[in-house]
Length: 239
Image (cartoon, rainbow, N blue to C red; front, side, top):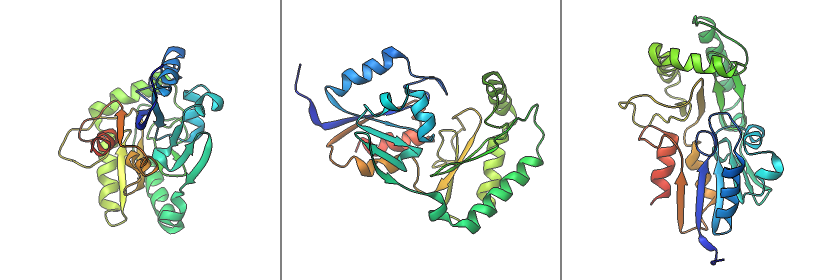
């Protein structure tokens, strides 16, 4: 076996890259990661909370065999199975702004009509609010149906435009699924059912502060066009 390259890290997005959207990693893909980790340092990063990433990666034991694990874009960071950092949106934004934001979202969602609505419209995470007009408890078929409906009717795009105006001075970023609104003149692409809301700078680039030991970081992710989280991370990590 060739010598491991200690100065090199390979960082993988989870949802849509290592796995199909909201599905579990295949045995072949996981084995490929383990074989790669014999050669270089490996990390995974996702916007979901640790429980969801763990579920997608085959369970906690399988997940923590990977050297670097970053859930919620790195706001919860593990190295070799040990927690090294945890940020909290409640501390960063404060209760007054959080309640103003949540109340505005719930009021907005109550006034839009969709072909269907389910439950869990606002999911509170350590590092972000995840907002789904259709509701995160929808089935896979309902998820795909909303995604197609949203392509035509721009439900999330219109909601983000409204939120950006309402909270223009509150240092917040708004992302459709995996999008980062760094270049709003470009077309919308991204995840299927949700909007992520988080403090400015708390996107996937946040995790890079824990990888300063490496001279080279290769990032692998879907949707690395100039409007995505993943493009932001890809651009920074290639410098």
